[in-house]
Length: 266
Image (cartoon, rainbow, N blue to C red):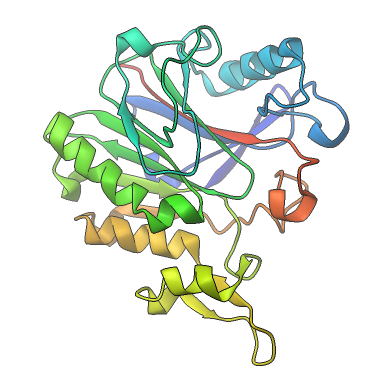
C-alpha cells in the first residue's frame, strides 16, 4: 500500500488499484482529524465522540481522498457474514440518514457516488473491485466473520447481483492485526483447523495459538475463484503500529476506529 498525506490527513491506498480510474478508495489512519484524548485524532468511532468532531473528521478524509461526503453509506457491523446490496435509496445512511438495517458487515454496489464505509480497530478490511461489470465490495472481516466466510459470500453476492466473474476481481486486504499479535485460545484455533498454513501454536508451553486472518481471507478469495496475482495484502499490523492505527487488542476500549472507503465515480 501507498501512504499519502494531503492537508495533514494520512491515508493508505492499494498499489493494485492505482490504474483503476473508475473508482476511488482509501483506508484511514489515526492522523489528521480533530478528535482528542485516546481517540486522537482522525477517529470514526461514534462512541465517546461528538457529532461535530465526527462530521469534521469525515469531511477531512473525504476532501483528502476525493470521496463524496454526501454519499457516505455505512455498514452496521455485528461480526456476522451478511452482505447488503447498496442502491441509490441507501445513499447517505449512517451519517446523513438513519440506517434501516442492522447486522451488515459487508456492502456491495454497482452504483456511482455511493461511498461504502466500514470500520476497524484490528479486524481485516477486504476491498473488492470488478473492472468488467464495474462493481465494488467492502468487507469487515473479524475472526467471527472470517470463520463465517464473509469474503467468499461477498464474491458470491457479486456474482449473483452483477454477473461478476471472480477471475476478474481485484482484491485488497488492508491493515489489520498480524498473526504474531493475534493470539487466541484453542476453541478459536480449532475453528480454523482446515487452514493449516495459516495457524500455529504460539509456543510449546502455553495453550495459546496464532492465526493469520489476512492469509485466511486471501485463501478464501482464491477458493472463491480469484486469481492470486489479483490480491494485494498489506503487511501493516494495526496492533504493532501505534503511530498510524488504533487497536482494540493493544488499547482495549480506550481507542478510536479507522474506516475503509470505496466509491464508484463513473
